[in-house]
Amino acid sequence: MAGECILCGKCLEVCPLLAATGREELGPRAKADLCALLAGDESLLASADVARLAGLCLGCGRCATVCSQGVDVPGLVAGLRAAHPDFKGWLWKTWLTHAKTLWPAGSAAARLVPESLRPDRFGPLLKMLAGLGAGPGLTPTLAPFLTPTSFPGTHRGERMLLFAGCTATLVRQQWLAAARSLLDGLGVDIQSGDFRCCGGGLKTAGFVDEARAMALHNIAVWRGAGRPKVVTFCVSCLSGLRGYDALFGDPAEAEVWRNSMTTLSILAKDTDFVISGAVPAQIAYHRPCHAHGADSDFLLLKAALGDRLVASTDRQCCGFGGVMSLGAPELADRVNARCWDQLAGAELVLTGCSACVARLAATAPQGVAVGHWLETVEIT
Ligand code: SF4
Ligand code: SF4
Image (cartoon, rainbow, N blue to C red; front, side, top):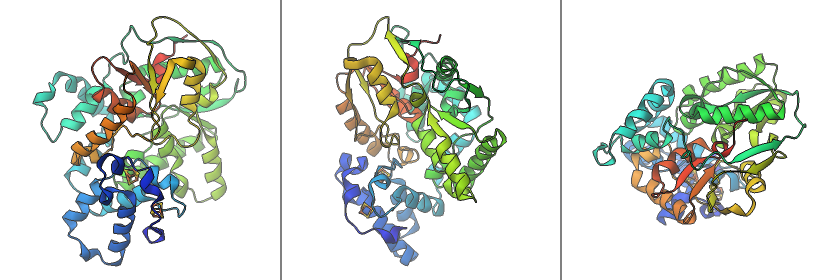
């Protein structure tokens, strides 16, 4: 796949790591070039150098979406990571594969550790865990302030599976409660499905076998339920689920899978909301890297909030970065700082990605609240 790169440079315009550092050797074209070089002769670079370079990618996928040649740079980087495993990767894998036990306890404990006392190696993880928190999310004086008053009947009685994702299931159950409340209002017949993690974070980090096992489990749940629509409310989960194509032997079934993916904000797009209570004057929206095309979360919020939604990011990444935030936290912080420059002045930042919520909540300036848009929805 690396050999298909024609060095056109189109991907350079969208890479948030390159934009934040100005270092072209960290950009997607250099990575594609490096992979082509290594495919020809593995011995050209020392293993440690390859591992270090492979660590320097946010896995945001922005480059792959603009590449006319179909070069999947994050996929190539994942291949390098798989071939050159290191401690950071192991730590990341442990965090994701033991989420059920590590996240709830870890997020509570992380909040108790003052930032100055967090050990360097675990600092970024602790920061994000603290940001995720198992608490109420947005401060009670700020949320919820969107009350649904009428629902469209488009999906009334339709049977669907809800893919809640790890964050909502393990540490932010209020997202799940708000999602269920909206789906109830829409009249959707929600079936419970014993889904596991989408596997997207593991796949990007190079843990292909673990990601594949999760994906096959999730596909089996979907098949067992009769292949209904699958509703998500995290765009990173949606991106992970959409990446299952290669696991289907039958292309027709792969297409049914792809078409079965939908988002809560698409289903709820014609819902009427009234604004009540104390609403921040300056609300901003962070567009996640994995929100491709029309961003249904933004469209729903814009329709509900109108001119109160004063700013939004477009090209800026939150700097979550997965395994990169462990190996090069200073670079991830530079990416994150550009994002906050764009969001300057907002009192509240909303988004539709669990990773972005974690990263932005962990880095928000004093007095700025960060949450998933579901936290603004009144549970009726
Ligand atoms: S990866 Fe794609 S967009 Fe980037 S330089 Fe190569 S061909 Fe162009
Ligand atoms: S995945 Fe993101 S950070 Fe990595 S090279 Fe592509 S655009 Fe840059």
